[in-house]
Image 1 (cartoon, one colour):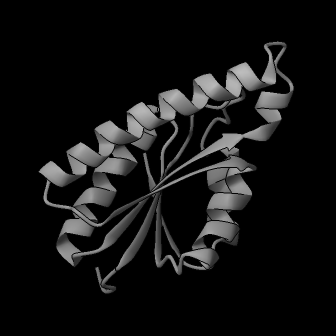
Image 2 (spheres, rainbow, N blue to C red; image 1 turned 180 degrees about the vertical axis):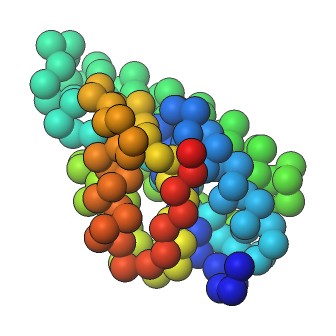
Image 3 (tube, rainbow, N blue to C red; image 1 turned 60 degrees about the vertical axis):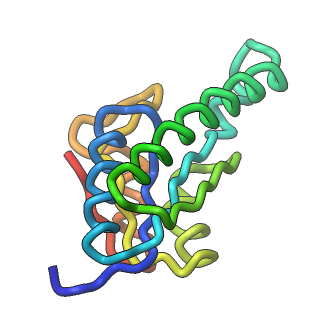
Length: 144
């Protein structure tokens, strides 16, 4: 690895690949004494197309995310990474992970799973990951 990464964004969504991406991001952060931006984007399209009440679904989703992030922060701290920032947003995951957040937070590495837990999975690389790889202003590490 030639670059010393200092600001690492890791996208999580509960999928196996995002769990692997989280673990990889923690290892990279330890080696580089970096800040990890633990990121979960609530897909606004999936929320608005649900038959379930929007506000109830959003409330449930946020509670689940907060619990998951608490666990991940503890895991990171036990591994020796204490510089962790949480980002929970509602919007387009691919645009926020691939363009908006890296620019807003001066991210120098994005760690993302090859496929997520979305409703429609692509065969090789997920739609969000493909977009991020092609549009991110920084390096992207795709975890299989």
